[in-house]
Image 1 (tube, rainbow, N blue to C red):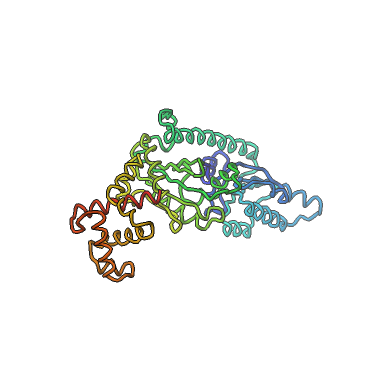
Image 2 (image 1 turned 135 degrees about the vertical axis):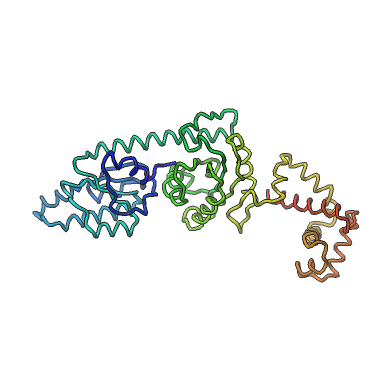
Length: 396
């Protein structure tokens, strides 16, 4: 979780008389810290997502050193400063106007609009140190609250007995009537497994693009996954995250799964397991999955003992193993299509580009090996269930 530029602007607008003059489309950017800068050449040292403050002192120094009293250097100074800040992924700039810089040139406003870079002015009689102290304190407090909330939801999922519901007080989760879990399996060796760098990138780059207020979710890293807890249905957000990650140079190849919705934080442990289950059903061709879309597999997911499923499959279809692997696989593929097409031979033949006589032979042999009547509905129901069980066991 992190504070957005919009949030900081909203609570300081009256206190420090800030005025937004350009870049409103970038107000959703998150702020990691606030920094003071007067020299564009030093901006290369910021880490990204900082909200910068300047008085324009460099303009005064320039006029003293060169005797140039024209206004053109103001434009040059602001253009260099804003361009460097934007290139370093800063979140915005506050100009303390009134002494060195009186007004913001129209060309600078146009630049900020084009870059979607928030630009604010603050009257000279407001001290920059007061603003910086207030914002930094707010960021520190927010970070502490996030760490508490992160631990709270970590316990809710992995150590339910340690969960303390009081930690949800004074958060957007306090009176939530629904919860969901999104898992994002991250590409291996991302940022050379530098957890701090990865967390910073997700917090201040990726998360700013998913369209949620930082108060709408809590997230943390665990075991190669980014775990997001939402107090809404997470399906739309998961789809957005998938779309963004496909275009992201670092997160291409990430796998995303979303749980069903639960009505209480007490059910988050189960929903995390459901999201994990959906994640296991992702293959190389798909990158997002929804637990609610798994159909009958949701029932199987509640069977905690894998041996129960394996025994059921062996009881129903295990005799086909006597055919040898290649022939067994051919027979199972035929049987799966035959069952899905309701026992229609011609349709099954067309589905695997095989002559109908071959299909008739395989179905007859399957019936003989299994000792079942392929026209009996109860037998076919067991066979279809066993095929679903095999699919699930193969996936997980």
